[in-house]
Length: 136
Length: 175
Image (tube, rainbow over all chains, first blue to last red; front, side):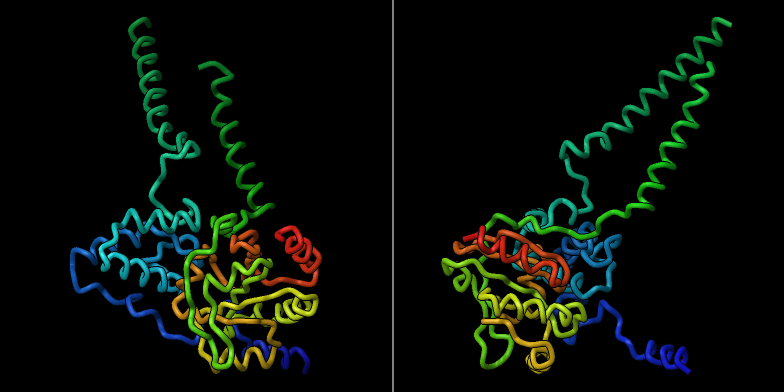
């Protein structure tokens, strides 16, 4: 009887990350009337990382905090703020973590240099092979 | 191709494998710390979250005495478990202000009736605006503000009894 009661109790438990009791923010799921501004906002939202669903952008995430961040981005774009200014404002709060756009920080240098290094190694390997063929 | 060169792919493979094994054993920390620590609290003024208790503004924080700002919500389960700890801190003379995220007055009143009310003021943050401005990424979180209104420490997740000595010590140091 006890396991059954426990199973029934599980049915009525609430998830740990419950949703709030307020509807989404006004601009969370609404496009800006100005298409150019909406495109700017959309491009920025796709490059901002959701704090709750950490693999998603705030444009893709259904988390309420992502909705509130979309509202923030759209309101600021509508007020004439530049996307890069909004991005820096958020980076000031959450660090470069919040932005998907690669930075030029020293930590990211290997990332930028890796393709170049691989290309050079490839060229060297090919050169060696041609030389070996020519001599052999 | 020499023998040594032939080993390179195997070595690389083992390197990747050990990296994966390491992360499986010791998963990455997914908490995102606020970068606002050691900076002044941003300018804000939140309306009262429920009748009978004042709202919260930047000017309420630089009082000359360090205090805690607790970010909570009535719909957040870990926040309920934190209530006892906040009340204990309150009994020991710690001033605590609340920020209620995405909440309604009725729900907050019911939550405080259930879990106790350690707050001097509670501001209503209906669109997580202040939460984002503070660099906070969830509920519950607690910030320690010094007497000059500078953010000194962030506690991510619910405070537990084990946190009490540390919090009291940090408050003492923030004087």
